[in-house]
Picture: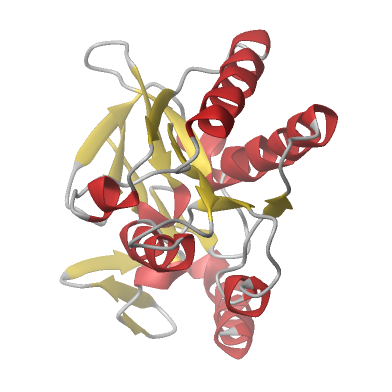
Length: 232
C-alpha cells in the first residue's frame, strides 16, 4: 500500500505524518509513506497511491487538480482532504472524497477514519500468496480477469496479462471474491464478468479466450448474466 501526505505547511505535514505512522505501527500495517510540501512534485511524477491526504489550498496547484490526476492513475484511490475552506467542497464531492479534516487534527477522528479506509482497501484488494517463491502480493480485485484450474495448478490472470500461480484453491477464490461480478461458470474457471466480450447460453469469451459454461450452470448463469447487465 502506498500513502501520500501533501501539504504546503510543514508543521501540519509533520504532525499528520507522525499520526499516520503511529496508526500503521500499532495496527501492524505495512505501507510506503510519501510526504511532500510541493504538489507539483507529485503531479510531474508517475506515482500512484492507494490513500492520499491532500491540503486543498496550496500555491501553484490546488489539491482538487492533483486529486483529479491521482484518480486517473488509480480509480480506487481514497482521498482525505485537509482544509479550513468550504469554497471547494462541491467540486471535491465529485471526486467521492472519503473524509474531510480541519486543522488542527482531531486524532480520534483521524484514527476512526483510517479504520474505515482500511476496511475499504481490504475489500478492494486481495492478498495473493504466490506459489513460486512463497511471497505475498496485493492485487486489485477489479484487475483480476479470471482464475483457472489447470491440472493441479490454480492460475490467476490480470488485465495486464500477468499470470500468477497461487497456493490458494479455486474454491478459496470463489468465496473470497465478490459474487456481484465473479462467477464460477465451470469447475475450472472463475471469471470476472466485467471482462466478458461475448456471451451465449453455452460459452463466453474474454477477448480471444473461449470459456465453456458447464451444462448444469447454464440456466442459472444466464439469469445471473441478465441481472448483471441490468445493473450495469
